[in-house]
Image (cartoon, rainbow, N blue to C red; front, side, top):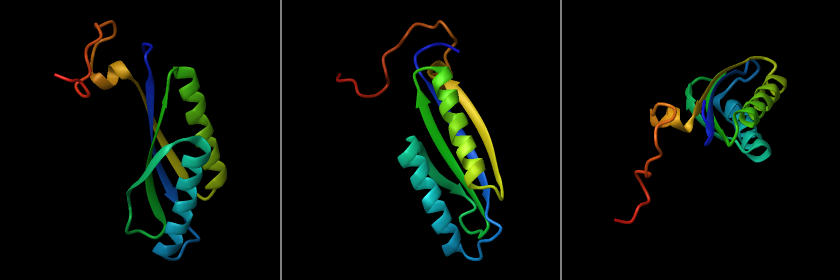
Length: 119
C-alpha cells in the first residue's frame, strides 16, 4: 500500500442475549455508538437488523495517515468492543489505501479531485 492515507471499515455484528425489547437494544446501541464516536473518534451507524431485539450490525469507519496508526486504532476499537460486548461480537475489517479507493494502480500520477474545483 502506498502513502497518502488509509481508511478502515469495520462491520460489527453484536448479540445482546439479555435484551428483551427493541427499546432495550436501542439503549445498549446508543451507549456503544456514543462511546465509539466520543472516545475513539469513530464514525459509526447501525446498518442492519434494526427490527431484531438481540442482534445489531454497525458499520464503522476510521481514517489515518499511516497504516501502522490506523491498524493500532482499529485494534483498540476491536479490543474495546470485545471487552464491552462479552456476550457476542464479530468484527470484519477492511483496510484500503486512498489509491485503492480510487481504483488506481500504485504509482499512478496524482489527479485533480472530482469535486470542489472552480471551473
